[in-house]
Length: 247
Ligand code: FPP
Image (cartoon, helix red, strand yellow):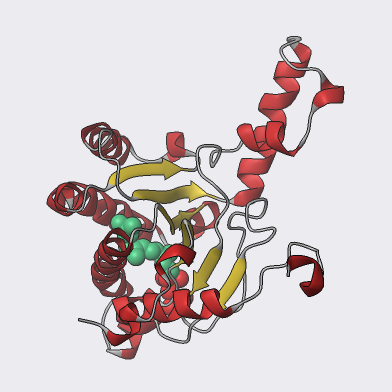
């Protein structure tokens, strides 16, 4: 049982939480271990957080697992991360089944190694009937890539006469993003004390509440998630209006 969990207001839960899981490397180095050990231990935090979201009834959880910029890391780390992804996706199938989790992915998935793409597609199709938490992995993802890609696809549809450029609005633009199927996150969490967005969900975060936590990702516990949600529940979300208007 968690005392913090009990304080959560059930009808004020965010329907979409996004997380920048930062600090794996520092966690490992601080213990005199290879960076990849931090990523490996980070998988346990992923499991805890996905289970916690399922337990309390959050519908969507997006995790920044591998950014477009992460391809520029040393080859051995990229390879190790890709292997870890394959192992995690297949190894966590029971977690997905036990918690009714549907695995989804956003990003430039064509860039992933074939083994990774295959494992991902298999897990997404095996869990496609699950109607609990959408666990959305951002892989080879960056928001600028997504926005540019959406612009290109939309321009093509304009050229083909499928859409009228004068009718393009926010909803139509959103429908071209790789996040089209999901509502915008109400809460973004970044671990490890860094205060940056790092090219993550730039369109979708327009009105998202930001929460920064000093803990390194491998140390992130269920209670840390509940604490972030509690903090979110205390905030007044004004969407450009005044407090008086909201009242
Ligand atoms: C950032 O820490 C983390 C990553 C680039 C990768 C995150 C991957 C995992 C948690 C494991 C696999 C995940 C899934 C969803 C299966 P960093 O390496 O930038 O840490 P640092 O800032 O301390 O160097």
